[in-house]
Image 1 (cartoon, rainbow, N blue to C red):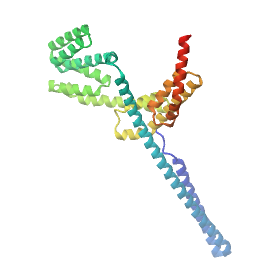
Image 2 (image 1 turned 120 degrees about the horizontal axis):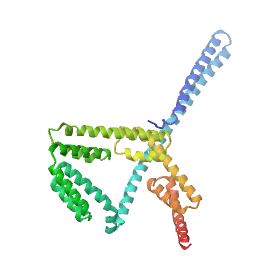
Image 3 (image 1 turned 120 degrees about the vertical axis):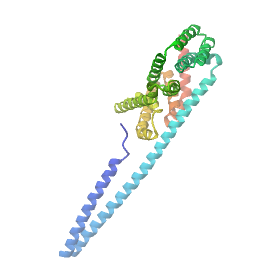
Image 4 (image 1 turned 180 degrees about the horizontal axis):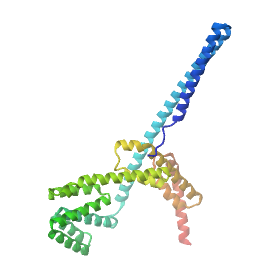
Length: 336
């Protein structure tokens, strides 16, 4: 897994090596001085011993200073990492708040238009799940909602035929349909829904070994998908594909344990910093090219995704002028 190495590891290793070399040199010098002290020139020998002692003391002092500086830098690095974590948490909260504000500003009619397709997908998926569970009453109720609330009467009629066919199916056909449904949910990474369906199926078919094996199969597929995402993320980090790495981090969020999050924390910080730098370059180019609408769009994204960065604060002060210029360009184009 691609990670960022601890800061200044090489400097500390160099310091230890230098201390060992300095100690050996000082001891050698002191040994030579002692031999001179006992054999011939006492003053010269004493001077050499003193020089060796001073060199040893100076080496220890410099190493102590290096160690202290290293600890201070590590403390600052950890504080910076905590600030990045806090910034990421605030960015997510800001994004969620922004989404809630947008949804709240929509009228009931607009919400109905925006969510119509989502409502259809949800009802259709829920009906399929009720069919697998043989919950015919719920299936009919949801089909009625599909017909009356969304006006999809043809689709509702087709689903009623599917429900009737499922009612008349044999036990083996029902099990096969349930297994196909489970496989589809796993392929779409709808793990919670697959888990819920498998639990209900175990009640319906308590003696069926294929149904009993579904929870183990679910966890196996979930872990396989997680390993695939981790492999893709590692490759994206290795090749410095910031966009892919940034997207995969959000996908991995629901799969990682606390220990796995700790392992990825350093590389994730690098990805977010690189993404911010990339967006900053795009913003600067858009301003330079006088593509003010594009600059406003990128600036909004930077402030939304990295609200506590210094760059976002700088962009915030520029946004009123950029919005005015973008509006002026749009007005000139309309007149032309």
